[in-house]
Every structure is written in C-alpha cells, then in structure tokens.
Length: 313
Image 1 (cartoon, rainbow, N blue to C red):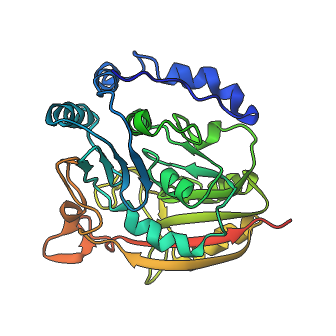
Image 2: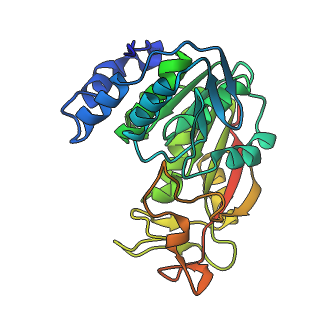
C-alpha cells in the first residue's frame, strides 16, 4: 500500500492549503471513494530509474502480480487524457499524444532551467514532468478536475517529487503569485471572456517572463463565436475560437509584447484518439464522416496554434 504525504506549498500559495484539503475530501465527488481506493491499492514498488522524456517513465522490478494490481488500480482512474506514461512496464496509452504537442512547444520556450512555472489547466501534470525534464525548478499546475489531480498523485506515488504539483483549483482562485513562465494550453477558448483570461495570465507572469498560449484556431475567415449551448467537435463550453491574428491581438491588448504565433497544426486522429485507457468518444467521432474537414456540427475541423509572448519589464 502506498502512503501519500502532502507536499508543502510555497509561501505565496500557502493560503490555499485548507481549500485544497476540502476539495480532496472523500465526500467531494460521487466517485471520490473509488478513486481514493485505487490510490490505496497501488502496490509499493522500488524505483530503479525515472525518465522525464516523451513517455514519462518509472521503471523497477515488478512481478506479474504487481503489474496486474498496478494496471487495475490505474484503470480505476479512467479516463486518462494526457500522456503517455509508463509505470513498471504498464504503458498508459492516453487519449492525447501530448508528447507531440510538447515537441511543437519546446523549441520556442525561453530556457526553463531554474525557472518557476505555472501550468493553467494542467490536467494530470504530464506537461509538468516535461517541464522538470527541461530543467524547471518548480511547476505549479492548477486544474479543477479532481480526477486529473488524483491521476497525478498516482504517478507521483512513485516519482515522489514535490516540485511538480497539481492543485484542484480554478485559475481564478490562485492568489497573487509570479512565475517565470506561464502556460495556458487548451484553455482560452473555454473562457467567456478571453481577454480577461489573458489579463490574468499577465498578472501571474513576472516582468521579463514568458507566456505560452495554445488554443484552437480558425485559419481561414473570421473568428468563430459559438451560440450559447452550441457544441464544437462535441465539446461543451467552447465560446470563441480566434484566428491566429486575434490570438496575438488579445495578448498585445492586455500588455504582453512580441506576441508571435510559432506553430499552427491540424489535429488528427493519430494525435487524439480513443484507447483502452480512454474508452469514450474522441476526435474521429467528432468529425463529419463524409467530410472530415468539418466537425459533426459543421464547423471547421480542429486546428491548434501556439503563441508565445513576453511581459515587459
């Protein structure tokens, strides 16, 4: 059985301690008891090596019985969206090949060595491990989805690192705190007011620091503003999908400088798909089978862009 120790928060985040404990109480969600039982069922295994590479990997001796218990516990935390991971020979083939996105992002980052990083909408913390692998001093991830926070705890049960934390919080709940690099990947199109989100990113970026915003974009024509309760590629809560130009305009308007779109890539079913670790519908189910350049609702199929910018100072 694995024991879980709470990692202390930095001084500027310490006021969140009680809120985080409340969010992770056994009665906080209808599935919380099952998820917590899965964490407790993780076998205690000796770690021989850790690799924070495309496949975040923990290796060490494990019997077939150990592997079976580990697989079953991890499957209780389904669905796994971001990854991939490999724990003691169990490969978690997540919905997203997040390593592909990281390869697109990494060449455009200010060096992460020694930097304090904020990852907004971090999911299960996969990108945080990649940031540590690139030399970051500390990564704070915030995501209100409790399951993702517990997936991070499952992985960190073996990595035992306090420098990549996933906090069960909305971005708006974060107290004043400054970071050298701030990531917002797959978030801004879920915000009713994208400029307010950009302003909040600015407030948490230290002077001279870098922001990285990754989002759906419209590459031809006007930005897409969806009607209330409409869906995009079967996703709820999508409000505005900008053009690449509008994305940089948002960042410049709130005070960032040198905002530049550094990558534009269509999303394909090879990058986002259903797997045994994410058995729900995925991208192929959200595209028009007769015209895959459109979603099932008739919108342009997903294309994603990455923009980087700097806070002056």
